[in-house]
Image (cartoon, rainbow, N blue to C red):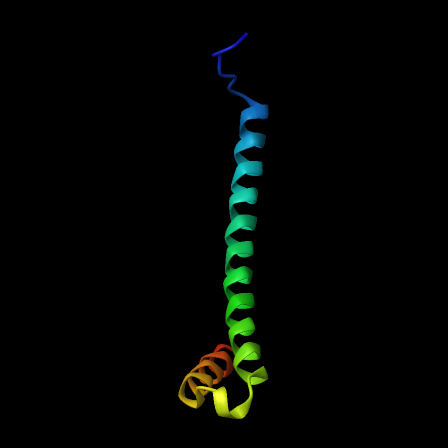
Length: 69
């Protein structure tokens, strides 16, 4: 019962499901990174002009624009 591995249709299905879940996790991680980058841009844009780091803002905007070109 315990410790025995079954080989057959069920294990192949499990491997496919695990592969699909791993792919979904990677996609989710990429989306989280993208969201963090966009949050950085919005944060810089919302700062008062005197407190803004214009160079950092320009760098963030260029990176953001480059991703959609």
